Image (cartoon, rainbow, N blue to C red; front, side, top):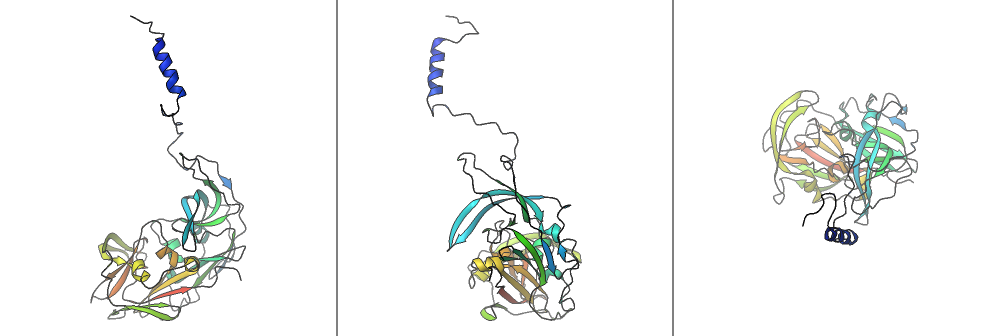
Length: 353
């Protein structure tokens, strides 16, 4: 029996009608996306920004001029600690002003310039209206492979799962967003002040010291020795990290393969940071010649990008016995050699008095 090409047989129409009315028998057609950007499906909400003062060891203290600065975008999955439990806050896309851009034209006037001229011992403190303060190192702002990951957020939108449609509360004020942090302890709201100052360590630098060597590392917290490290822990996996080693001053140092263990895990045997240390803690790594670099506790212990600081053994070579390689840095300057001390400290500044 032939059918007219413009008509459907009755049995086909009946079956199609049943299938369309029966949930689950045919998959519902998903909406066609307008593009491949998963972060622009919801309109941005503007966040009011306070005037931000820059102060401390800088040439031009005063209010930051954000009017000509570009907006940078970061995507974050925010979670916080609550009595050792992880509390998920939400997934967001933020647009805001990079701490790099805010500080890049500030010429540093270091208090310890004569003793240590490099900026890699500088701390950056951000304070909000409530008096809360968090710490970043100069190096994590200006030295990383990936710049502009710390911003003062001016706009926000939720990142909504397509299957559940779940969404999250949006902040009402501007906030600090440290996009590389695993726990968002440094993401304080309504920042009003940025303070730059040298870390509180006075130690002369012995340039050209020969032989540059330290047999072991003293691990110190709050002026108390926690441990003396004389060998790499044998129970940690050995990591081999290749890099084009490049210094800010002397340039190319060769293609190198660094083999060692995680500094975070090595120090973690004796020290586990709490929320206060994640907000306001810093670590100073000091070489036998007095050369040192400063890192926030969060940039070493609280990362979400899997980049590690590598502790390796140079045995009896010059610059030994132990050195650190900072895989997250573009420049080699914070890769301290002949490590003598690792000093853990915390400023009591992260909560209002």
